[in-house]
Image (cartoon, rainbow, N blue to C red; front, side, top):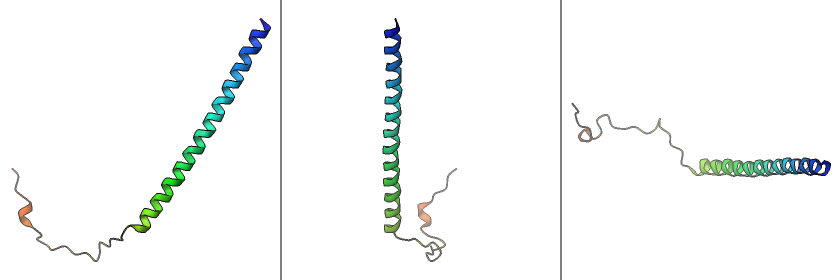
Length: 71
């Protein structure tokens, strides 16, 4: 009986250690993915052309035929 209790206790301990190692591995992979995503966003922001809305002027009555009356 005592041997069964020790075996069960060791199984629980090893299962807990395995879950901790799995969680640490998951955290590491999540950190790597997050760092890659941030780097990709920074590269995309540098490469994107700057759009300055203040200098771009649209005509007042641009293409009125595109809009139709609803009713």
